[in-house]
Amino acid sequence: MSDQVELASPPFDSVSSVHFSPTNPNHLLVSAWDTTVRFYDVAANEQKSKFDHRAAVLACCFGDATHGYSGGLDTSVRELDLETEKVNHLGQHSDAISSMNYSRDQNLLITGSWDRTIRFWDSRAPEPAKSKHDLPERVYNMDLVNHILVVGMASRLFHIYDIRKMDAPAQTRESSLKFMTRALACMSDGQGYATGSVEGRIAVEYFDPSPQAQEKKYAFKCHRQTIDDVDHVWPVNALAFHPIYNTFASAGSDGTVSIWDHKSKKRLRQYPKYNAPVPSIAFNCDGTKLAVGVSYTWEEGEEGAKTAERPAVYIKNVGDEVKPKGWTES
Image (cartoon, rainbow, N blue to C red; front, side, top):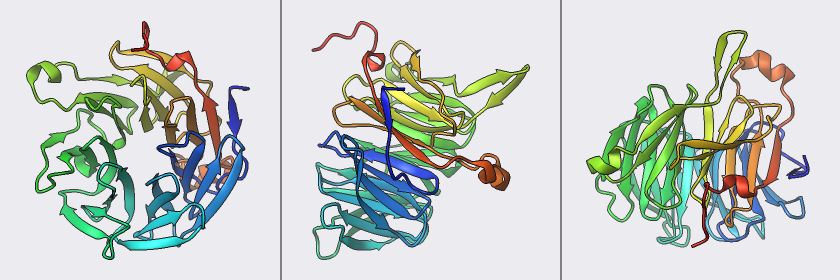
């Protein structure tokens, strides 16, 4: 498939997350269960640096162009200098760090953990730990758009915060989906978010609590297949909104990635299937590329691990298939 390249020197164990730089469309961070974060230049197909950790890394993100952050099972929050390869330990959670986002407006890192807290960090301050906010459940996913932070938790709970006013959530919601939340992404236009569950469904939600806005929310089945009259259902592992067109991509344990237009409620494209589940996807800052992490996600347990392919990261060039029908450049 000439529209995508496979990155050289991928992780040795399953990919946990892929994240592009906020400013450089060719710079990518990949965290993995092999205890590494790798920094790639995808245009040159080159691993520029690698950061070793004490345990599996579950989350990574960029701060600015030359700094990344990471967290995982060793509970430590790290700042990674992508040029010098120096690591700065900012502090600890008391359980695994499952997700993180960086607010460029506030210059703050936000981390979420299984210890039922979200914490704010300023790496430039002598005391980086800024604040800690208790939650009713373990944090599984977070995403940030403008000042709005959406936190997906165990027990299908969601908190929506304005990060400038963290004394209480602006809204608390229960998932529209009946099963565990596995994926979460905020719309690029700041109007709402999408979530995916382990039971092959996606829900599209809106922040505005008014009845008119709430009428637009909906859910649909996906990442399913009927084989010999038996319905096979896979988890939706990851969601990512296109930075310009606000369409979104979904990735599942069925090895497929699809593009959806939530306004018209239609699928725009399903890409050719990968040979393993897709745990993480990300669009780059100018929306020309989609990073696709492909690796075993343990649905078949220990047995499946014996025959699992080596993890891979693909960089897909995207075209008009991500544009909503009738899109005009404004």
